[in-house]
Image (tube, rainbow, N blue to C red):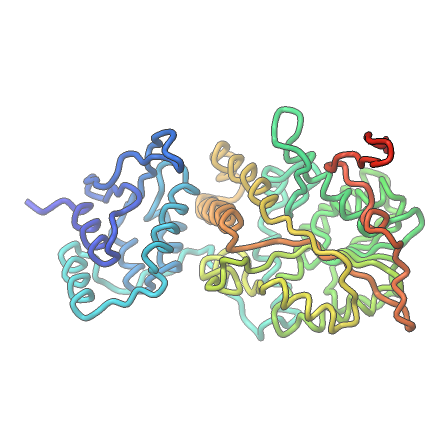
Length: 460
């Protein structure tokens, strides 16, 4: 009688990494091993441990051909590897194990490799390289050519307007929210996204009659908000045909055609007269390292002197020094091909070299944890609807993507910042007000200021 599979796998992994498995394993033969529960941080309660389900030996074959993140991602997306329980919890436990044991620097000796080969042969894992899942991105052409950039954006953002409408808030804001209150019955994702849009408009000091350019405008959430509540005339550019189609229909339904224009256009192709203000919300990550100076120079060129520019952009976090610039093999292959994230300081250098003056840098990293969690909850709680919209394989891509993103922001391996800039005039003047409060505007999440002379709160 053959030995159960799960204990053999667990024994091999534990020998190689020198630590017990953080989650339970269930193999294709029905055998299980590993912890059934784990005490929470602080030891106040005991939680059920997530279970990694290896549905097919092909999952292990993928790991033999592509050890590490890509092999695991392919197995998960193909449905050969699954997680029972909270997927974010499972990823968190493995990440903590990797950090504690320094698995990034794990070196396997000849004896380790021989041991792994014997187990693989015994379990029937050896064989030809499995084909990648169909949803893996396959782009051609030179990196960050206009054609390839369009294809990379289409891979992610043209997935399905119906799916994004299902996942996001009614404003269709697909970026980090600004949570001015604790989440609860009276305050949630819709409010946080509204507060984010308002924060951007205040930082840009938008006034009636101004012209706003939004580079990478998504489904027009900021364009609509700025036109409706701040009286601007707005132009948005996107490389996603489906985003533009949705945005145009939304603008028409609201009767804003005379104030909002949405173009299917590369940022390098914008030739308008300079704008009063420019925004670019989580689009700079798609520009690439070599093209970022071109992007920064184009934003500078399209902005009037004394005009303000606000970028909201993700970065490699303080504890993410070993994180790949594109977010890792899974992100690059399945979610956002050609994406590039650098440390914040490097981005600021590019912007200043283009002639822009950095006025304010605002970290929203933890706000992204609070933003991603509702998206992930929606996906998990309404799985049948999600699968009907995008299919089982893409559902699994998104499950892994959102769980991994929440964890990366939570553990400071990724960050996100709002960077406010101004274009000085030829004499170096910024045209900004003297006080920080006047520059950034009143924040609905801040307490009312106190007048020391009156020893009391000053009414706004």
